[in-house]
Image 1 (tube, rainbow, N blue to C red):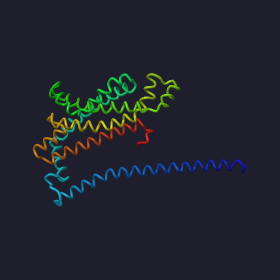
Image 2: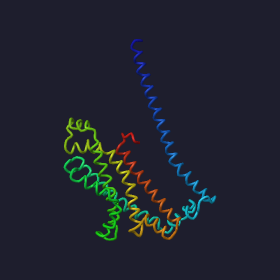
Image 3: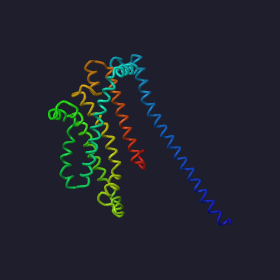
Image 4: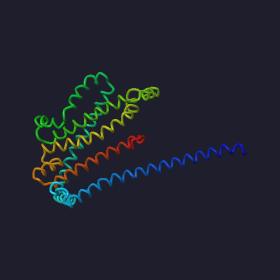
Length: 282
């Protein structure tokens, strides 16, 4: 009886210790996530308070560096007359449509080039040359071809997003561990099965990295486009406010662009958490 109870007790003790260790690790991770959230909120709050204090004390020119309280007041006025809502929606629609179309096209083309050496040899130099051209520089050409309207603005976002996603998708395919492909073939994953069950899951981390980079660049592109070829949108709001020397309204536009970028990036990160629950980057 005693001879068999000793090992059993040790196994139970080992299992208890492992459970306690897992619980400690989980608590530590929750504390770290809570600290990260707190720091992420506290840092901009402290900066805004410092901004307000320096303008109130006259340490900086309040005409140029508009105090946050005046910016909030200007935002309220723009919301009341519908201007801010209209500009946000205009930018959001252009950004969303161009981003989705460019991302889908970039992923498909990236997969094709990553899987086919002849296609990669034929098109990679061309895409590399085109990517070196600032996409905003294509706007005049797009305006000449398609005229003044929504399409040239959306195509600018499409171009920015496409090249980022094409490059990242190719990188994800090329960097796949060959052992994954061998394991997939051993289990009968060939053709479409290999694409769906091995290649796509394997390159998803690179794809989501590209999506995060692309959303920021796409927002930069549409903002710049709206500054020179639009009569609405957040870019137009910033540029028109500068021309009329209305710093509070200009800051409202800049803050709105920053918030739009933060929310868009957050959506991409949330999608990554759902698609890649096993990823250690979270």
